[in-house]
Image (cartoon, rainbow, N blue to C red):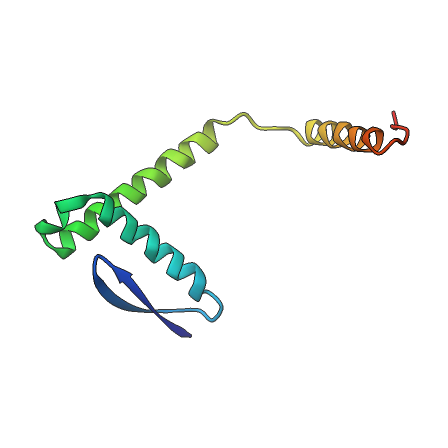
Length: 101
């Protein structure tokens, strides 16, 4: 285990994480801090309430992204293979070679 100190909303929070995850946890902390900063004077409501609102905003973004992913049309493996073959043929032709059928 490793410890990371996150600076969020003008305060430092020490959290434990797995070895090698420090950079990722620091980035997540910066996202949370950015949400708090974007809320402006909402921090006047108190630390716990501000962190709750930041968490709700982030959860809403995740929810929307998951919805967009679920709504995206699925691409079949055959379609992916066809696209890959076309891209390969284009690359060969750009290099001056001959494309395959």
